[in-house]
Amino acid sequence: MTIRILLVDDHPIVRQGLRTLLEGRPGWEVIGEASDGLEAVDKVNQLNPDVMVLDITMPRMNGLEACRVLRQKAPELEILFVTQHDSPQMMREALDAGARGYVVKSNAARDLLEAVETVSQHRVFTALHRRDSVNSC
Amino acid sequence: MLSQLAEDTRNPRGDVMKLRILLADDHEIVRRGLCALLQKHEGWEVVGEATDGREAVEKAKQLKPDVVILDVGMPNLNGLDATRQLLQYDPNFKVIVLTITDSDQVIREALDAGARGFVLKSDAARDLVSAVDALQHKRMFFTPRVNDLVLAGFLDKGHVMSKSEPPSLPTLTAREREITQLLAEGKSSKEVASLLNLSTKTVETHRSNIMRKLSFHSIRDLVVYAIKNNIIQIEMPPQIKTPPTGSPAA
Image (cartoon, rainbow over all chains, first blue to last red; front, side, top):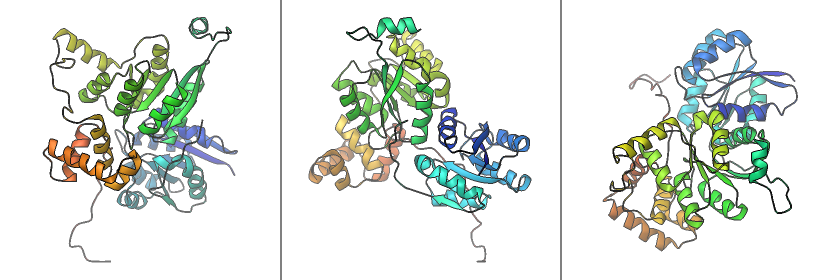
């Protein structure tokens, strides 16, 4: 299954890590990157991705605000948060803003592929507070 | 570059040896990004990874890497205390610290701990290769802000670098700092004892000493202290909208 993905995080090194992971899956394509919410809104308009992987804490416009804006402008887009905030309250806020998935950054390497696959099928994926594991690069 | 590398790093048989790097960050996704960045460089090899400072110290002792890259904000043992432990064990370790903030205090602590490189995480994609390259060639690498602070400290015999200025954690021993971090992360005395191979009674004695030295009466005070002194780091979330109180149930 082909999935076109937009990555949004203010740290290039995190985007690189996410890209490395996602591009290992045949048929999945990272079609663009953005470093804050405003840029993400622009890139969604330009590129029309299937799934957006979105951080919460970012400069200029945070991920929650971007999610609310895009829920109106791009209803077909599926939004998956990948965030440092391991909090049920924040997860609730993200889902209320219109996201379909929520993954904690410390577990992203393990949960991300399943999460992207799930939200791309318009189903909900959430995961909080699990242990990270060490895999060599 | 390659000829310089060859001159610097030949083994006794004359083969060019790779620069061996140990990487420590609690987020695997960040390690993957850093690995992808470093592995692009011919002649460099990531020989090990660690998810916290304690594991980094153990792996560094085992693997004896040429360069150790340590995130500051890691669980169990933060990157600054891991740097101190590593350099106490062997002053020849070359450490680069990765940090989300270049506050004066973090810079001062990183320099005091003996780090030879200081890179902001947000700039790692741009600066980390330069930092490793600098250490490989027996130089140091600091962000422009660190350089400015060091220079300012030198010029005015410094606010930043002065030896007469009391350190930010004047009263805690290395062991007490370790225990402070673990308690501030929410671990019980029993869990701390298990992690550090100590008896629960010993941990409780340390805990009492820490609270007495700092004149604290609650764990809450200790958590605030740990955050203020970069023993633990937290990322503040954006403000969440709370529903108005007293609204009728749906």
